[in-house]
Length: 96
Image (cartoon, rainbow, N blue to C red; front, top):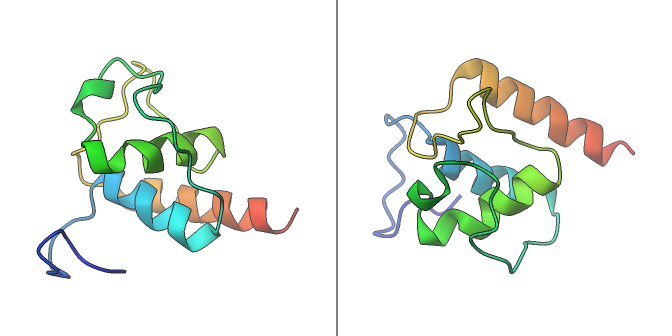
């Protein structure tokens, strides 16, 4: 983990869903999508530019998903349940 763009780690701050996407993609070792703005979510324009390829890759690889309203909520803090589910998804993908 590298921290934010200023190089600050911020261990006492919550991890956003777009940050979680980056962590999962980097950890899992999957190839990063070079495609931007092809996200299927209604709030796709809210995803930070730097995070777009990570979110796209995490969603395409089944590591993360949107919610029932077809939104990704990129700036929401990831819940424990979302993080746990994502970790299980990474483990399942790596064991195949």
